[in-house]
Amino acid sequence: MNLSPFPRVKLGHFPTPLEPLDRLSELLGGPRIFIKRDDCTGLATGGNKTRKLEFLMADALAKGADTVLTQGAIQSNHARQTAAAAAKLGLKCRILLESRIDNPTTEYLQSGNVQLDHLLGAPTRVYPEGTDMNRAMQEAADEVRHDGGTPYVIPGGGSNAIGALGYVECALELLVQGNSMGIRIDHVVHATGSAGTQAGLVAGFEGCRSGIPVLGIGVRAARPTQEENVYREARETAALLGMHDAVARERVIANCDYVGPGYGVPTDGMLEALTLLARTEGILLDPVYTGKGMAGLVDLVRKKHFRQGQNIVFVHTGGSAGLFGYTSAFAASSPKW
Ligand SMILES: *Cc1c(COP(=O)(O)O)cnc(C)c1O
Image (cartoon, rainbow, N blue to C red; front, side):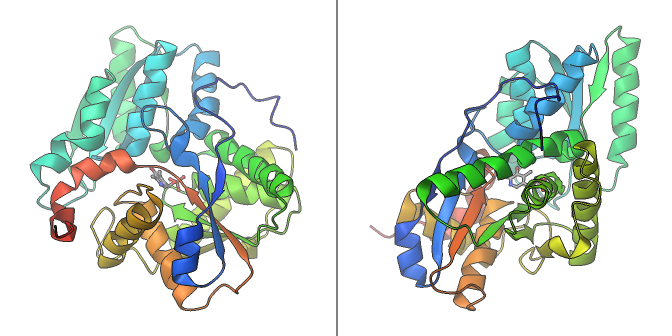
């Protein structure tokens, strides 16, 4: 498997650390839990989109683009990292945001990632829920052309085969780190949304015949849709690397039992997981992705889904900037003096 033929720009701090969560593991009393710190990629508070953007932005530059466009939810971490990557590379960036939450608070609409998008110099435009965002991006790209620019459209979440190459590399990084730390990685767990992260990890681990299973904890779609999306993209990613048929359908597994009432809507499990990680490890998760992903991992450990003595790696995909878009959801968990 060779990533070197693909154009790439350096945007982040790699390799990210792989660290044990000793206090959390002890508290839960199950397998040994490790964390892959992809929240520490360094790009304007970091996150998983940085790895994808190293390949996507290089493709944009290779195609002569001067303006990148992308889309996401209002508190999109992907939009914020794209704005930061564009700033670092001297490109313009326009962001399309879909309103996916009923009765959003002022902080949701203005703070967290939205504040950072603007600070990073990217104008945003908000669209009502249910808008065909891919079509809206094509229209926005036409506007850029009309203004004399050369647009490059990045799909939501940076999820296509080019972006997923970033997570093929993360799989390779984890294999090297596991080997050098002398730990056998039994399972990788992470939050899955637009599917590129899991697709890249599965393509990477399967392409290396590592046998390491990946469990995606869903944050939006139901399981059949989520697994189909990941499977399709994992196959495309493997094919891009010349490894046709490297990914079997049964190697793509998502658990979508922790979504709660909907995408971006807080759940009790998310609040518990966030509080737990903050207070046992000093690590910040996020309300939309890693909070629900960790809620899934904690619940599965309690239900003895994993065995004592196993090593589980949770990939921390970032998103803590989104915390400030959700201040009121945490009001009830303030500690007593
Ligand atoms: C985008 C995102 C994810 C999900 O990654 P996908 O590649 O979209 O599945 C997980 N965590 C955070 C913090 C994200 O921003």
